[in-house]
Length: 498
View 1 (cartoon, rainbow, N blue to C red):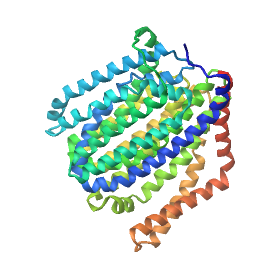
View 2 (view 1 turned 180 degrees about the vertical axis):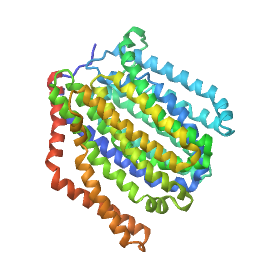
View 3 (view 1 turned 90 degrees about the vertical axis):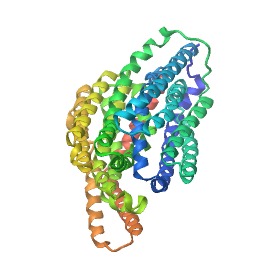
View 4 (view 1 turned 120 degrees about the vertical axis):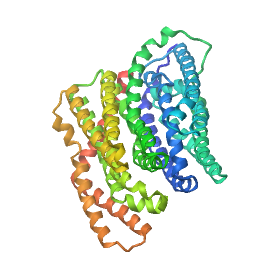
């Protein structure tokens, strides 16, 4: 029997989806706050070399993890009705795929260690390989939660898993485990996620399997996987190149800077991307061309408005943040951090547009663009890596900027709208960032002898006030209209389901 919303439930869907997205945003903020509170502690206890060693192991696990659910999680989430038998088939198919990938990583661990000349790497890969099976077991639960808009479950799961894994990492690091403290952190994180979403999703699994029931989902999932793989390449293969050419210690600096600039994307990737996906997916079939154009523009404007000041501000105070939070031994991460801030912003904008493509069902389009992104970023890094970390960071930022422009060009073409309209979505954030940067740079000149902590706090406060003042005076009504556009899109989707 298919799962469909009842008459009483459909009226609650919009509020549940919106509140769940807000809860997921809050949970993501708390999760990142805890991670950043732990970051300087772990950085000082573990050190760049050990951190870089785990950064070499994780890409192999993350690459396989992309494949572990067959791309069927989002495919299930996009369906209006899914049968219990179909969920059972997907569960067993994903579980088998996850187990096979775990065993494959174990088999490849020693050849990879020899290739990268890192004798400790194989055991780390073997210890991390169970993550692949664990993630595959969450596919059906994740799909049901996305389909029903119960994002609050993800929010609670993020908090529980983050707290448990952070405490584990801290205890292990204090005990002198080194790189193994980070391995333990990852294992506890995924085990907690599996336990939570499985218990809350309410997806009973039967001893039932018919491959034909998953064929349609696999067609959507295959292209989704391809796109995610390409995204993965653009985000992780550069680390392998840096580690292979410049060594684990230099990779530690680069990986730390990259982790920091990815934090804003991690903050919104759950709530904002899911909210875009559900809004676009619910209205793609019935909405007018003008409504879809408005929704795509609103998504970019909202994303740029909230993310641009974060990345610009990070570039402006990178030296203060690294010296104060991470310590002097991480000094070489300052340059890459400043430059990679631009790459982080462009990547977030590409992700917003990629999510729009997914909601429209244009997975082939997303796949092509993701492949382009991976090829351009990896090619740029490979071309300049021998010149050092800052040239690599500049290459990544430049490549991401070029591909972001291509994303805008293609999205405007698909929606049959002027390119300048999508580009204009960046105007409020661009104006605000110019004013913010001018205020912060002028104030830094006057505070050259202030304590680091005081200067950092004052710069963050001043930047936020300057940026907020610009938005309030020039774009507050437009941004409120953007928020209302998403609420309207969700309401149209509920009416269509009814």
